Image (cartoon, rainbow, N blue to C red; front, top):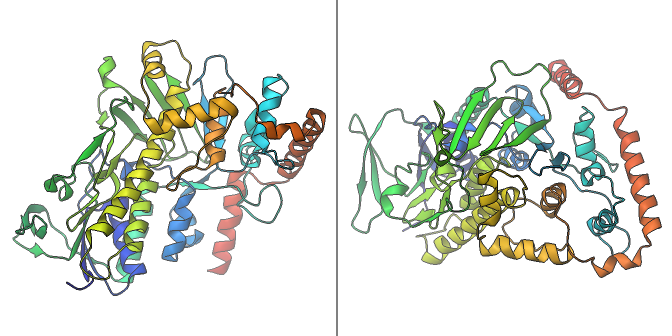
Length: 478
């Protein structure tokens, strides 16, 4: 068998059209056809508007710039998430996508901060993040230059209908063919692979490779008996109430506000608000979306690759849903076989995909198991046995403030630190590296760093002012 030449993408929405557009744009010789089935309500990668900074890398790989993906689609910039009431008696904190502070000599900054925190003299950890401080001050700028705002991460909040329309137009522009119709059946061959997708009018779509972007039902991949890892014993919330804000606020916020509740959490963002909770607690709500947290152990099975919620279902805390879909697309393109797929190629794809999904699971679970609230739901979460990987991370951090870092990480060390330290988790002992920096010298450096951030923020525009200037520049060029 030669290398794949024909790909059929089953599923529309953001996930399906992103998959089709990326395959055709980045591997132009592929014949890519999409069956754009409407995504179901429970396909969170297609329903959650909030994204991680990695979305810009995905756009760059496709050759899409800010004009197309932000200004013309009405998307909003975001700098992070404000967490409230996750730890009783603890102030709110911001998880921003940015470096926090500056190390001194061989001592990492967070270790110096931990020493001050144990002594009771440390300002909040997020005050040493330029992005978090900028967001709290109601200011915004994209990363530029070498100053405090040279390297912070920026995500997007998508206007999903307009963003999807942009992807559809782009995919068609680069040569993706769209086949309208309803999925009526699937034909299998003698070895169990998909032989054809059959539409309601009898049309058969055949391909060398099928991308299943149909949501949690996994209309193709689900027929292949791929084993699934069940995370419901750890991530116990299983219902989502979601409301799109139409029209969105005039001054789009750059922070989501995520507030813990008695049985889960709720949020308000630039385009949506919603609540996530455990239905078993007896608080079912009308219109709630049911979901079961877990991941396929073999997202690439036979000649089908599951992408998005067909591969991983996880609640939207920390907004990883679309990121995991984009990561699967990138991984598929990077690992497209040159001939008949070898079992080792599929195994390596599956190993990487599951490792990434598990680490995202750990990061989401981290919020629950380090929260401190009195309600039964939260007491149960705090006492449950943890996945070995998260248990190891917490043991290592609680000993001396150190963090392991794995190959398939979605969130960097500063993100882990933002949540751990924001929720008041401190190690029992100091890292010996801090002994090289006298406490008074570290305190002076911290104060100077905070002053530099405050001075740099003052002249920055508001988010609305920044977007208005961008829009003027776009129209002047038109």
